[in-house]
Length: 110
Image 1 (cartoon, helix red, strand yellow):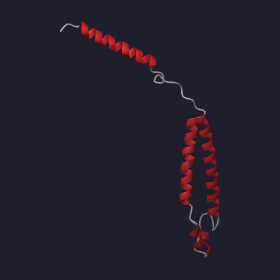
Image 2 (image 1 turned 60 degrees about the vertical axis):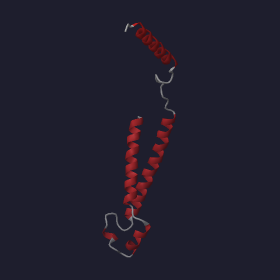
Image 3 (image 1 turned 90 degrees about the vertical axis):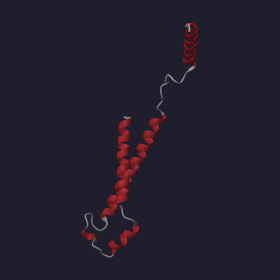
Image 4 (image 1 turned 180 degrees about the vertical axis):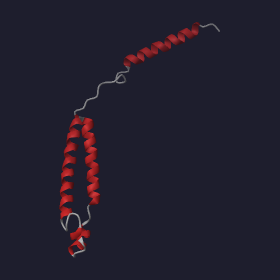
């Protein structure tokens, strides 16, 4: 489930960035108010702003909700102890192996 949420989170983030980049700034509305052909657009003279604004708001809410959910899942995620967490037993075995190797080298005649 965590991996699925991460994929959805990535898609929402990419969609949010895309919608933000598509939107025009407030200064671009000046030409539309003087009749610069905005009535022939796909969404009409004011429809694009409302559609893009609402879509951005929905994706932003989804982005923050997914952030909270993934953060909650990550905070409660515990790691299992690995073999490297307690090296005291392994170190004793290595020291014994080295001492056996040194003793066997001493027994080899030159």
